[in-house]
Length: 161
Image (cartoon, one colour):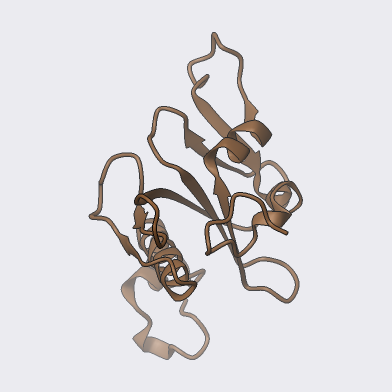
C-alpha cells in the first residue's frame, strides 16, 4: 500500500508503515526540531538544532542582547483522548516547544513555545512515590487551551500581550 501520488515508487518507510506516513518517529522529531530552529531564526532569534542525542535540549537560540536559551522540543501527532506529550524535569532547558502535527481545522501544525516555569506550573504530574514522579505531561488535545498565549511564540516572550 502506498501514499496517494507515489504509485509503486513509494519510499520504503511508507511501505513499512502501511502508507500512513512517509517518515519514522525519529525523522518526525528531527523535522520538528528543525522547524522550531527555523521559525525562531526568522523571528529574529538566531537558532540552530544541536547534534542528535544531545542531552537535555534540542535547539539553542540566541536572543539579541541575552544569554543563549536552551529549547527542548517535543512533538506528537494530534489525537483526541488519552494521548500525552511529556518532558522530564531532570532535563536542563529554559523553553519548551510543543509541536502538534496533523491538527484539526485550518492549521496543519501548531507550535507552542513556552517558558519552562509556565510549562511546569500548568503540567500534570504523578505522585512523588511513583516511578515517573519526575515527568510532567499534558493531554495532546488540551495543549492549545492550556498554552494558547504561547502559540507561535518565536520571539521568546515570557508573557504574550
